[in-house]
Length: 109
Image (tube, rainbow, N blue to C red; front, side, top):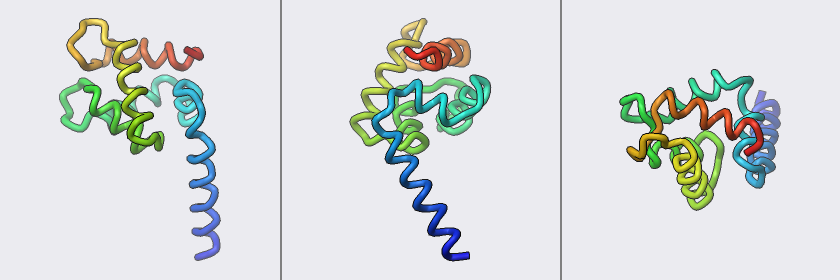
């Protein structure tokens, strides 16, 4: 059992470190099955204050803790993601802004 746990940990760490150089759209598409799954994951795990909107800080935290970006990479990616998707200019992404933004990144933006 210990050997199995060690093997799983090694594979998991190797996979995460190998992904750290990939563009955001490739990481998101590798990590989930479809757009609906990505959307649900970001809203469920990213929306820490449960207001139905993802702030820049929430997006950054999602990228750091669920995609394993370092602080600087997560900060840059979150700002870019927010800039690309924030249609109404309020500094956050709601559900109607998140879906098209995820589509942009899934299409190789």
